[in-house]
Structure formats: structure tokens, C-alpha cells
Image (cartoon, rainbow, N blue to C red):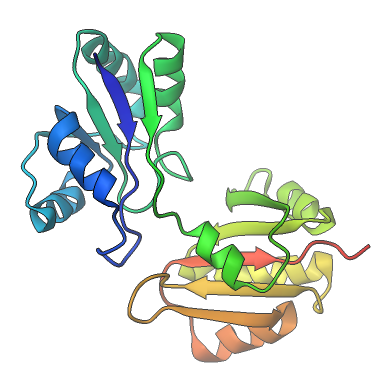
Length: 225
């Protein structure tokens, strides 16, 4: 019986892949759908796995989805991976999963690595209720989203690139105030992993002086009651 497996991959440290994910890649799928076949090829080689790969990323997922559904309905099983983390979390995956649900194709999501969970838990901010925002829009709708985030009473989590981090922290400070607490995690699971905690003003000052490198997760305190 055909099935789509969503398979999380390490976000940095190659040891952060589960035994179940390795077994699924080896034994239960016919083809790997990869965001970047070169990066996935390196991971598969590291794991000693030889499987056919197909590119599935944000630039072709609309065109590929119908073709993949046809293949799944014909009896193939597929494993969807992204460059790092869990498919569908700020990465391709939603369109294909929705199409599978619509066509009664079984979907199985394996648990595994994703960047926002360790960043949230390590932030020291409340983690019982939170809002995951992913990447903010660069232009249209950005100010509206920023306003909503700063008014939210629960902890908010954002992904950000190095060249936009300071701008985003400054915009948050303009709306929420410079004393709102925030945590920034960078290079999670990698050798230079670091989590910095403080107020928006303090972290803006730090990154303006120290520079910004690596993949980043911002965890912002909810609006105080």
C-alpha cells in the first residue's frame, strides 16, 4: 500500500536523526523527495543509504504535486525530506500533504528535529502556550504581522536570516518597547550553538557590536498583562 512519509532530518548535528527515520529511508520508501538533492545526497551517503531522489521544493511544488499523487496512487511509497528539520515547518510539504488527504493517500509523519522547539524551551520564556510565526513577510503585510505579534499575550517564535535580524529586533522594539524580553538562538545543534537572552534593547546592542552569523530563531515574550 502506498504511503507518504514525512521524515525529519538533522538541523545541524548529523546525530540528530532517529533510528526510525533511518529504517524508513532504507526499507519503506521507493523514492526520496528532497528540497535539495545535493544536500540530501550527502546525508544519505553518510547513512549508507542508496535511494532514487526527486527534487521537491518551493519553486516546483505546485507543478510536482499532481504528478506525485498519480505515482502514489499507482502504489509507490515516498519519503519527503527538507534540507533540515521537519517537512512543512516553514518548508515545502503542506501542498503535498493536503493533496494526499484529498485523495485518501495515507500520510505518516515521523517525530524528529525542528529548530523552534529547542529555541523555545531554552529561552527561559513561558512555553505552555505559544505562537509559531515562522518567517515574516519582507514587505507586504509585514507591519501588520509585527503589530499582531507584539500585542499577543503568549510567547511568539520567529525564524530570521542573519542580514535581517537587527532590523527585525529594532521593529519589535519600536512596537513592543525596548524592555520586552527576548531570546535569540543561533546555529542550533552545531558547534557554535549559542542562545542569548535579555531585553530587545540589550540584544540589539549585542548584535550591532558582535555581528550576526548562522541560522536564527527569535523567541519573544508575550505582552505583559
